[in-house]
Length: 133
Length: 152
Image (cartoon, rainbow over the protein chains, first blue to last red):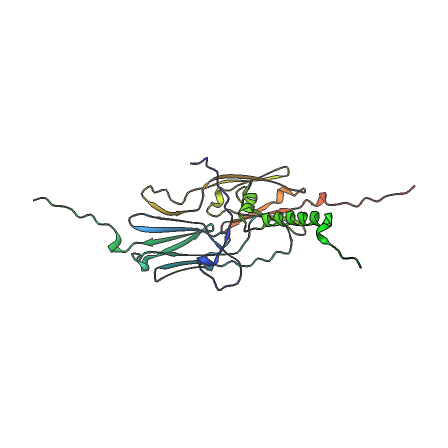
């Protein structure tokens, strides 16, 4: 798949249906990948321009909330071309209750937030050996 | 006393038509309408860039989250700046099931022609949090020069 060309996807401004945010400034709905294997759920979120310390991840009552706050940048120049807008990111998901809350890990690299949500013991499928007498 | 019957004036109808067409044009360019999305998306290249200019520099900012700094290939030839690279998929494990797959991956290449001569020896690039910032100092020698006009 190395020859596949990357697609440009316009940033979508946060719509009121996806949850209102009581903060100032522009917030976008970030693009995400969510996948799971038998042990964990992984959430990958594109948040270019956000410092790792400005990211908030919160999971309560099965609602996972991801917020990235943008630092306003001062530039005393002339804008010649604007193809993308800058701002924060906000997105919420409902996750099932089989996540081990204590073991959630988050990392931020090159503007991409990766969340690992391990499944709790009871959610991991276990093989039960069938013994034949 | 003259009573203006607007409906009979041929110019009013023409003007109304013009106004309607203009309104249509602007609503097409309105960000939220679906047709403008088509206009804006057409011919768009990755990464999206913002270009700024201040006193002595051009500043090009590009959003390319998920690309490693050492995998960005940046070059300048003449007055053309080229950004090349590849965004690799996050997950290579086959045994997963996807719930969302919105982030695209693949290779990209984008060339930008610089409108003025820049000092290509002093171009700086910095990559942080998925945003590439390229600083291009303007070539001092190519600035506007005053030419005195002599009279005979």
